[in-house]
Every structure is written in C-alpha cells, then in structure tokens.
Amino acid sequence: MENWFSTKQIDENTFVISEPNHWEETNCYLLVGKENALLIDTGLGISDISKEVLKITDKPVIAVPTHIHWDHIGGLWNFPEFYVHEAEKDWIEGNFPLSNEFVRKMLVKDNNLTEHINIDDYAVFQGNPKRILTDGDIIDLGNRKIKVLHTPGHSPGHMCFFEEKTGYLFSGDLIYKGTLFANYESTDPEKYIESVQKISKLPVKRVFPAHHSIDIPPEMILDVHRGLLDIKKQGKLCHGSGLFEFNQWSIIL
Image (cartoon, rainbow, N blue to C red; front, top):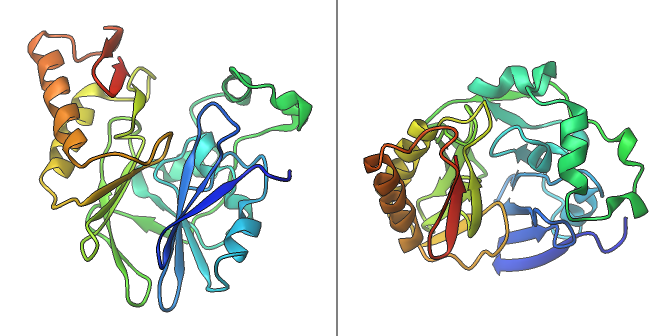
C-alpha cells in the first residue's frame, strides 16, 4: 500500500517509521549501527515495512518487537532474523492468546481499512525467533549497544530498549501519550507499576514510544509512576477498576 508509512530522521543513524493513517499510530524505530541495523517493532503488516527500511540502509536487519501484539509484529514476515522475549516465545510460535477475530475488530476500530485490504484475510504473524532475549541482554550493532529491559505489565514479555550512549529509551507500550492498556487478561497492573519504576531510575534523555506523539519529555516517566502509585493507594490498581485520566496520559485497568 503506497503512502502507508511516514519516516522521519531522529539523528544521523536513528529513524522513526510510523503508521499515521491508522488509529493506533504505531511507531517503529530503525537504529543503524556499523555492522547491523535494529528495527524495534514492525507495525501492523498492512504494508511492507522492509521497503521503507531499504530506503535507509542496506545493513543486515535484526527485528525485535517490544512485545507480541499484532501492531508490533505484523511486519516480521520479511525479517527472518528476529528476536523475542522468553516469556512470549510461545505466543509468536502459535499460541497467541487473542483470536484473529478479536484482532480484526481492533484493526478496523475507527478506521476503514476495508478500503485497502481484505480484513478477513488478516492473521496474527507466527514464526520461529532466531534468539530468545532476557533482561539485561545486549544487542550489539557494531558501534551501538542496545540493552534489553524486561518490563512486563502490558504483556508478560514486554521489553523496553535503552541505549546508554545516547540516553534513548524505546518504551514500547509502557509509556506513551494517550490511553495505556492494562485491562486484558494477559496484563498485570502490579507488574506494570514495577516496570515503570524500573525505567524511572535510568538516565533517560529522550523517550521514544510505540504509539502516537514522539514528543515525550523524560519527566513523563515519573509522572506515570506517581499516577500509578496514587491509583494503588486508592486500592484500585487491579483489573476492572476502569479508566483513570491524567494530564498527558490515561490508563484503563
């Protein structure tokens, strides 16, 4: 599909490839190193993200979804070198906990994708990862080292990625402007707050989320942590508590 992606340059070797025409506005990040490139998340798979990557680099590409949800793994089919967290290995290999019917309904929510694709043909990607990641692992791109941070809550194997040299944090679905989701059966509100606390201790200079605006100050991490602590003090940090709204973000439990 033409004009599905929008690509912007963050610095000389870092790019964001976004899907602005879908309500989820997924952001994928391409980090180009001396030897390899790393693609963090691959979008919905509605259009071929590998073509966008090839416009930027001809380096071998490692693809790593922050977690195994349809809007992050849809483009993995064209990247045989992909890694996942150990907690979601079974999800990518055929045991995804949500049905294709549920995913299709989410895809067309507030967006008429039926003009562009046959939604009945859409299925959640399945495949075999080349490497299983755990907390603290390093992905070495040559002159760039990216640290894996296991940050469960939104999903069991959710990961953030931190580049100490630049202070870049790629926060996936843990932190972004908009509504955060911790209401699925596979989510864990208690682990969510622990994960936000974990990244709040890092020397983050820029936050790059998986959805919506990438204009996020690092201080927002602390704001989210304080908000979740307040919800916990009310005894409502649990499934079924509903929607809680704050200044630049909200969360549904």
